[in-house]
Image (cartoon, rainbow, N blue to C red):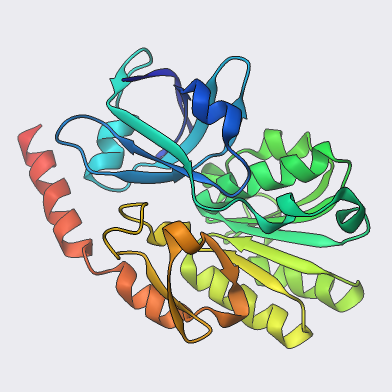
Length: 281
């Protein structure tokens, strides 16, 4: 069993939770994820590792309450326990395996959308701790959905907040903020994490400018071990599994249209389950 030591709503229906899991806290790297199971009847929930404290032994995750299991998880009180918390899983971000000499002169831009800002954070933090400055573009619906703004502002990075309605930061899409950066400066790499349609549009834009781009497809994961095949994705004409081959891939090789079409397979079943839960309360 794993104890919840912190649970706070940080934006509308979005929660940050700290789970006491010392072994995961000591070994997780940027880009990796965990799988948790709430109880004996719970489904497997894949979530990116947002932050860790190896000394205190906790792992931070950010959860958006959108379906039956995530509503159940975020409703748990501090000191409650969950059944399983396995990880770290998946491959760490590619830049983690590079030498500081390779990274110090590189210009990297991160583009995150919505809850995708959470998995962007550990990557920017890792580079910031190595004194490598990055540009970070984060897109949200409005001010009430902005997450981790304080945490990002403490890093060695140039942070650009975008909102659809202009209630905070730049009014417009992340691609509207990204394009001038691509036009007026040499960019070595763009790393994008967030809604599939956002990553597709970022990829189309960076391909136009010839900038190598990485997309994290963690939203596709189900089982997290490659057993169920639910996270199949076509990359460069080949079928790969997000959980074991990724979650990060060459964005210019990803078939985003296929990935988006598969995301909605269980949407009706999830809505039905949530409706039943509402009637039972």
